[in-house]
Structures are given as C-alpha cells and as structure tokens.
Length: 441
Image (tube, rainbow, N blue to C red; front, side, top):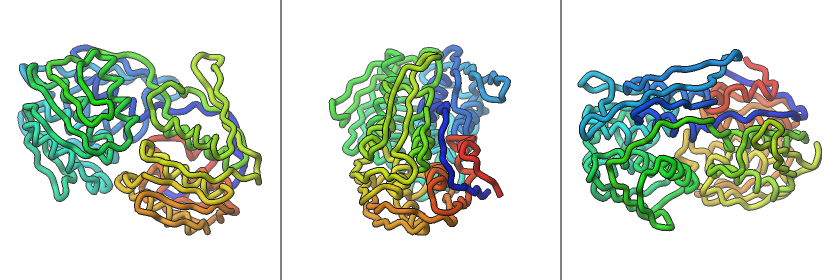
C-alpha cells in the first residue's frame, strides 16, 4: 500500500496508544499465572495480535471485551497451570509451530517461556523475522539445559524444548530482549533450580528496568550487580494475576510530537506517565535540546498530558548530538527531525539499530538522500545536515518506524511525499497515517 502525505500544519490533541513493550510483557506474564488477569486498554496492533495468537496457541484462555468503537476495552487472561516441574502448555504432545508475524519481542520472550515446558515448540515468522538472529539467546538457553534447533545463524524457524535445568550462561545483548527473555522465564524454573546470567554487553538498559519492575511487582527474588553485568535468579517463583491499565507508549508518542514540530504546529499528548520506566521518554529531553517547548501538566481527567510545540512554521529546530544506545527505536524519528534542523546532527552509539526490522542506519541514510538530505552513514550512527527536504517517494522497507518517521517528514517536505509499504505502520500504531490525513493508493 502507498500513502501520500501532503504538507500541512499538524496540531491538536492525541491520545497515545498503549505501550507495545508493556502489553506483550503483561500478556506473557498473565499467561503464566494460576488465575485470571485483566489487561485494560492493551495495544491493539499487529505485533500485539501476534503475541495474543501465540499465547492462545500455547493453551491460554483469553477473552476480549470490545468497546463501542471496536477497540479492546480489556483482555481477560486465564493462565496456564504448572504440572510438576514444568508448564502444561495446552497443545497435543507433539511439536507445534507458532507464528510470531513481525514481532521480535514476541519471538525472543516466548522462546524462553516455551523452554519451561517439555514439549518441542517451533517458532517462525515473516520474512524479516526469519532474518533476525536469536543466536546469543539460543546459546544461553543451551547452557541452561534447553534443547535448541534453528536455521542458519540462529534464525527462525527455531525449536526449543525444556526442561530448564539452570546453571550459568553468558550472553551478549545487542538487544535487551535477549536478557528480558531469560529474566521473565528463569523465576518459573523448578524450585531449587538457580540461573546465573553473565552479561558482558547490554544495550537498551531501560527495557531491563521495565522487566525488573514486573519481577518486583510480583515479589520475585533475584540478585543483580549494579551495572547489570550479572544476575542470579532462583526458580520456584509464582506470578500472580495482574490487573490494570497498560501505560501509553513513549516510542509511539514521538511520532505525533515530531509531526507537530516539523509542520510548525502544536500537539497535546494524553496518557503518558513521565515516571514510567520506558527509556524512550528521553525523546522529550532531546527535542527540548533542539529548541522545542515541552510542557507537562496534570490532566483534567486524571493522569498526565504533555504539550509539544516548536518555533513556528518556517523556523527550524537546532541540530545536536545524541547518544541513542539506550533508545535505538528513536533513530528513525530523530533522523527526520535532524533533516529539518539548522546545522549538523550526530546520532551516535546505536550500531544495534542495524539489527531491528531493517538496518535502520542504512535505510534512513538511503531514503533521506532521495529527499535531498545530506547524510553520512557511520558504523554506529548517522551524521545529518538539515535543510529543506524535497518531496518525492521513499520506501518504508516493511519497517513500521521507518514508515511513521517519513510520514511525519511528509508534513514538512517541499512537495507531497509518497511512502511505499505504508501498511507496516499498523505493527505498533494503527491509525497514525489517518491522523496525518494520508491518502492511500
């Protein structure tokens, strides 16, 4: 599908969709409780639906309550009961295949969870997923006694089979999802089973803070070094049923905020919690450094709202230097903001952006260049000289964040901007392109 974006000023009030990271973690944890959980206002996106499908295929009973607008009001999740020292996943006693679609979060986290059972589970996904290596995670699982089989370079299809025997593993984590997977599953190993995890490399640390916050909420014991270089997790823990509203997504919030800044408008975002563990809340500090106005206030309906405005249409933001190691998902949106800024912006320490849905460093350099933006690609980032990006056509490369970043850019380009593969935006933010009044072909 192609989306045509016509330049115009974007202003208004936007309710930010629920966090993908929180939604998937809550869904998987609820699936492993002996009881019923109620996940309120979950993210309804392709990635979240992929996780929902995997949980159901594992035997989890999930009921959906839909409101009058067709949006999920809540998911009622009845977890899987433990049988002896392993989980009784609800499929027949033979190998099953689970399709995670485009959801890397679901793939990595569910791999470790499936290793708590004694029946082989095979995971696959779309073309992008089958190119994303899980080799480091698979090596760690093997060291913990799990039987593993995969395609070349640790890519899907991947088969895992427990039991989880514990012991010591060492894992380099260019993506934090490897470590989150181990931390979510290890507490549920059998009592007396201890998992020691050495972590010589860790990117995206805030996502580990998020995962640990869930262990803390459930009273799960663990030990860790201050620098997160080592964890010790005893087995025998139990996750409790959990209820509550899923926090809004700072990663998604960056896109309407950037759209307002690029187009010379002002937007108020509803639903974000500035005290949440999500690392991408750093986006608001970054745009403040670039000259944007960011004002938090208490919402009249409870909670928080934040208003973002720039210098006005025709007045440019300031360039800057930004370390994106903890927040690689911000690379596409920061790159398009840099394309409209005054001066040269450096996006650094984010080599792991190359192993997301696409090589986001190469893709952003390539597509921005087609709009006349001067870009220099570095091994760990980009140098972008701002200017007046032209219109034309770009390819979304099947990557939701690439599509949404260029959609935001399209409101400030000289002429209309066509984005090929625009349907990928539905992976995390259904409706975003409609918000920008895109035309579809």
